[in-house]
Length: 294
Image 1: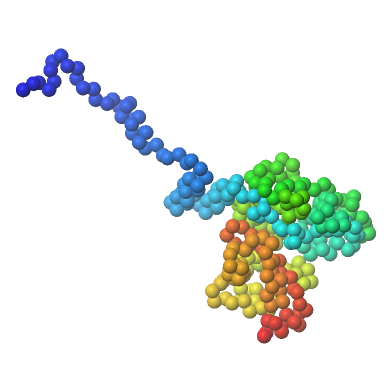
Image 2: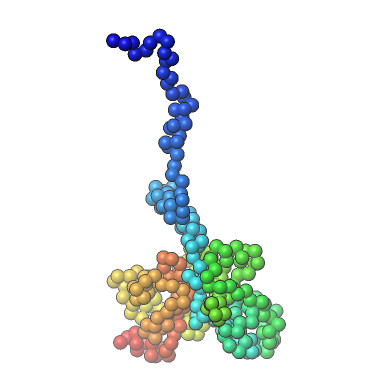
């Protein structure tokens, strides 16, 4: 029987520490993500394992989503834009400016498709003593963008140009809507609180004689008491939840419906829910009370 290790044969080499470490690290090396879906899966796992808290998870997921979204996904449609006619004196448009509460307004001349610039509400402060003032000297140049522009590119442009609002045009050059920097940021960080959020307990704010601004998280019983309505509270806790059920999908900015003499329009929304609603009284108070009581 032959000797398995003859004297003249070289002894078999065992793997050294270095080669063993290299093999182990190669085996343990994590799989690298190949696309955004893989990154999203990693974020989902990190959130489930509580490596990321909800806020960090929302922001990182939102940042990924922004790269895939276009202006058309979040813009305020043309039909819902609050615009000012440059031919009207300040005394005529000032009530509209106060009621809507916007800080910037597209200004048109003649036709609503003919937008000639943007009016900043703060520019009116120096001219408020002259109600007959012509708006033209106060109008700033407008920025026009296509509805196919990606949100991550738009955000970069907003930051570099210091503009906060852009007019969206369609493929034919007509006005399709508008988009603001806040709209883009809310896709990343969620709802951005504004001056209406100073009172944490209050969710409905009157903005005019017949108009209000309400948070989507307004409890239904609070809404019913405020407006004399009778929204069902068996299946929904908030007005935003009721609205989603009525529309059959997550409310989108610009969508509206009428109920019991009220016109309810979504003025702020993210991918999960309605954030802000504009409530307009369409009928006289007596008719509203009769509708609510019947």
